[in-house]
Amino acid sequence: MNDFTEAHRISSLLEYTQTYDRSIKDPEKFWSEIADSFTWRKKWSKTLEWNFKDPNVKWFVDGKLNITENLLDRHLEDRGDQVAILWEPNDPNEKGQSITYKELHAKVCQFSNTMIANGVGKGDRVIIYMPMVPEAAVAMMACARIGAVHSVVFAGFSSSALADRINDCEAKMVLTADGNFRGAKTIDVKGLVDEALEKTTSVEKVIVYQRTKTDVKMKEGRDIWWHDAIMNMSDQHDAEEMDSEDLLFILYTSGSTGKPKGVVHTCGGYMIFTYYSFLNVFQYKPRDIYWCTADVGWITGHSYIVYGPLLAGATTIMFEGVPTYPDAGRFWEVCDKHKVNQFYTAPTAIRALQAHGLEPVQKHKLDTITVIGSVGEPINEEAWHWYHEHIGKGKCPLVDTWWQTETGGIMISALAGITPNKPAHASLPLPGIQPIIVDADGNELEGNNVEGNLCIKHPWPSILRTTYGDHERCRQTYFSTYKNMYFTGDGAKRDHDGYLRILGRVDDVINVSGHRMGTAEVENAIDEHPKVVESAVVGFPHDIKGQGIYAFVIAETDGIEEEIRQTVKKMIGPIAKPDHIQLVSGLPKTRSGKIMRRILRKIASKDTDNMGDTSTLLNPEVVEEIIKGAH
Ligand code: 6R9
Image 1 (cartoon, rainbow, N blue to C red):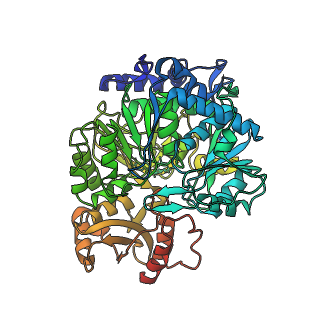
Image 2: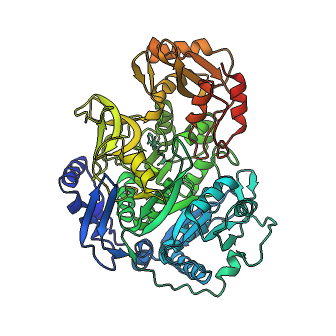
């Protein structure tokens, strides 16, 4: 098998350093050399055009391509019979699927023809609200092939969240399923779509994939079964010619305020960066089996289940289920069953599994794993060590990958086994990425042992281009805080060795008597108490100190508040001791597992009259309980 990726895979620390230096000296030359190895219908005339004032960023200007020719057609000759997608269903007793590149190509072409026959064309927006079945990935790629803009909405979102997104992008079509198997539950997906469509007017057709065989209502003239729609459709399709800067997708993500923003990514740059970052961070080699446990409803699923891996000709696993069904050993069972080499998950999953003890892990060999990864939030040291020791068996590199929906791909991370690992440190930037740490006035803090706000000072190929329908919001949110820089919203520290550690959102920074602290830092300390399961810390107005510390803690037993204070005192110092500790049964979380601090801040500040939108929470019921028990 031709290893076309070899030329782009960095294979030593020295090579990393040299490549990084080269990429910073001449970013355009660096990225254009990588882009050169892709299939383009027409080569770009200019590599980069940019300013961060408007902002306006264009990569591979005037280049023409179709990303699916690089995802699929390009691989047919060399790896047509290799498995592209390995699908593992929710129920371990149900048979999974192995779909080769040849088969995937045929499915995508067939569905491209199906969408066209149902009135969708270049530039139209299509909502994908589907379970984790291969058809969800087929749907994404078929959109890309015909030039439609997909917007995947996580199938766990409510009907009103779905309606907001449909309305914001004025989607013409919805691709969905009858239902969704999630652990022991079955979710009535089609019912939610029907509800959402009562609040929208733009959708003309709904194509429904049959998954759960649930009884659903099909609206005459609007709804069609997937299996009926694809019948008699050809599996040959000539991909639409797209401009580098044509929209590839919109993905909605929550800001700290207001309605979700539609982050826009475009074809050319996103393609190059997801490919390159996937290859290097995970050190993927031909024939490896790679598994990212995310849902395609999140950016991680877009970039590192579908686009990055398939661009690199990888075998990528799609998992329909949840980590604890039928038991807490499911991830590890799947790793053994499919002989997984690279495993990529979120700290929240690790902590949940850690709470079940070692027995579910020890039942499995996990001897094929060579790389483990983490994404989504800062990984606390305790979870890092558990993951490294028990899943990585103390020998696999653990890549802590920092990035965002807006960055499109991994920005700061170790390259597995190439650059050094340091617990809880995302560590070093990828080639082409220029992170800087600035103080509140935007002055760059150079050298080591500095802490401040994390910005990026030069565009990379997969930087967001706009927020859909509201460019001003994009400018304000990311490009107005500091002049000529992309502001990430995260705080970061460069330690004495020059490694970057992400401290969490700066909107979460608390300032107690003039001492600045990361909420994650206090949480890490609290979590050191052996009876603590999870904690969330926010600041609240304090008459004397400016801000006080309020800790919401899930613990195994009552009556340990004072012990927790002592633990924090021991870990950080008396200044970090929480003023209030409230033991709770759960923390309000988004469906991607992030704690909704906005809500906790309001509770801690006794500002509970208007809690804002809690409908997208995983566990909205916990909010009432916390309000009742608050100080
Ligand atoms: C990929 C993704 C982005 C925010 C980001 C940061 C946090 C993500 C992290 C991390 C520390 C990591 N974050 N990865 N913090 N270490 N390895 O999660 O995108 O959902 O847009 O979230 O998540 O705070 O700003 P998204």
